[in-house]
Length: 140
Image (cartoon, rainbow, N blue to C red; front, side, top):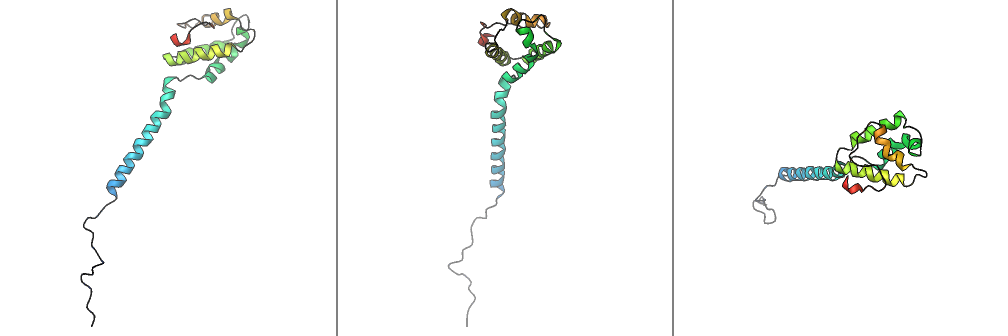
């Protein structure tokens, strides 16, 4: 007769029972930490300078005729100048706007330096640095 196998040497009962909850919790925490880190990495550069050269050029495009020697800036130009001034609230924003203006202005043939310098005043905007090709944008 056969006897039931009571203590078979190859069958072992585990001493510890593992649950997946701590691993899942730590995995979820890790994923959350990674997501937050990525948000900081992606958002941080934008926090430094909210203004881009594309924005500067777009806002100043209606000013082109005046900047090339025209008699007065049109209302759309002054709207753009006011919007740029309102956007440039931090030092990095002002430095970006300044650098973009200088690099764009240097590529515009026939640009009137006098009209460029007078543009903020003509639009009723007070800018705390001169509009000039010789301005040091790192100090604005």
